[in-house]
Length: 142
Image (cartoon, rainbow, N blue to C red; front, side):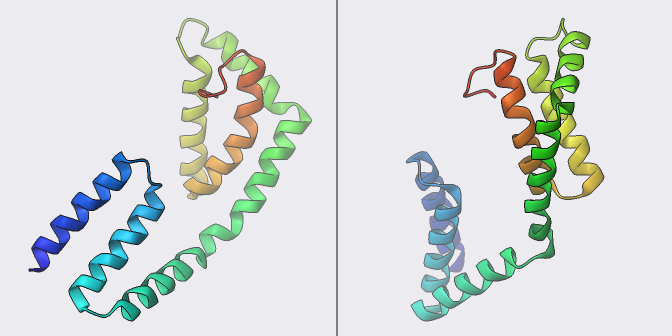
């Protein structure tokens, strides 16, 4: 019975993603529904969902995100990001999508150094978006 419930929940999650429901909402709904079906108690399912959500956000990893966003804003406003993007644009001129590639590579390196990929993505989004828009990238790609 438990195997069938797991398979149904995975299929339900895939359907939710296909229909455009946000992944976080889909994961929350399918996990709560799966726990409810396995334990037969809706109160326990909701309680576990609340507890897991709270503990995940309470993690010390998420404390640094506002500071990384602030750092990204400083780098963007002081002009250092513009200089770095100009250098990357000239150095990689033969590579199609050079600034997108440089942004992804820089973000990966920064995430590896800091150990916090979410905060790294937050900082790089503040830095990369305005510079890529200035250099002609479409809004969707930047």
